[in-house]
Image (cartoon, rainbow, N blue to C red; front, side):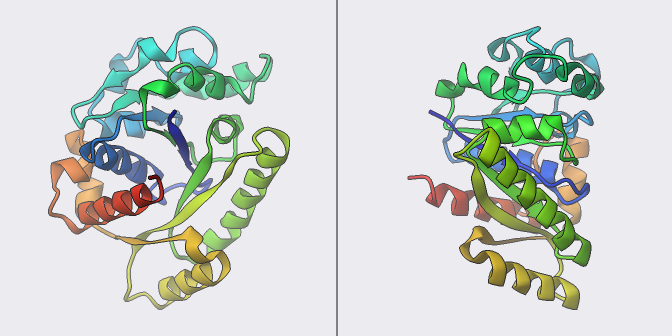
Length: 253
């Protein structure tokens, strides 16, 4: 049965999608069967996987509303993993889900039917603590939190941890934090080093040892429709995600 990880942070621009697509590709390169679920209406994980989101007829929107089966909507991408894509149509799901039964558990129900096909399922969450994110947390076993080492990131982290605790209490008792990933890290920045030390003191071994540097190749890769670990394996950003993949896989014998 698949291990399900939600990649989440309500703050935008912290590297959630970059982490999701590179981790999916890295795990696929390591021989794991991987499904990436794009749960963000922006559809950036879809584009970053080389899929044209404007030409999609069916997406995760149809899965959540019961208008299609995940097994028929998933697509195989060139980077070696399967993808359930998204586009702007997903933005309407927030309103439509409110009136539906089991509104928080619809993603979990959909993934349970195909979980046996994969070793890992990664969910790229939107930059908000919305009903879509709650669906991801209800479906997942663990939450991977990418974050920049800056002051406001610490404030947002407490809100995110609070949401995880509420979901664990009310919807998904198995949910836990997989780890905190420090992204866009610049070791020359005094504040970044200070926040990094605070994270290590507070969260201990829940902070991944891997540091993802600020790297232009990571930013360029989506325009080529491929994760950096596929497009430019020699870049420092790609090498960091390869190291993260290895670090995570060591925790799953």
